[in-house]
Length: 151
Ligand SMILES: [Cu+2]
Image (tube, rainbow, N blue to C red; front, side):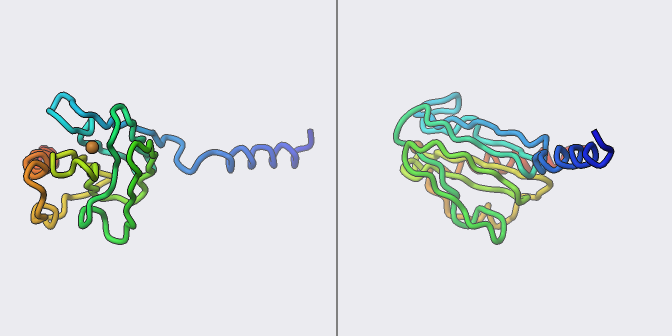
């Protein structure tokens, strides 16, 4: 093996590695009933590194995962899975993402995702949530802002 050939092999291996070798995929189950009550994403909060993904698992039927208007970082286009569709979403942009199940948003089926270093935008607290989504989001907002303030 020539030195040049060896060098090319090493280079190709380096380029073949994914951009973020440590990126992980987390699973979120879509459930009719979970530890926190009926119609839930479980878990209902995830803190990701940029480049991590979430796979939405249709454990129970009639659910989907979709971003909530006004609850994504600036410029992010959003996503919307079809009912019963198991989508995998990669999160590259730092910030907070509010996600709902479209048919059960009014029943409080929501998920909060934090990516990278980010502060919860104050505008999220001003959103006019459906009645049962509001207390769930408020609990999640309080948890992330308390955690951020901890030493
Ligand atoms: Cu649902």
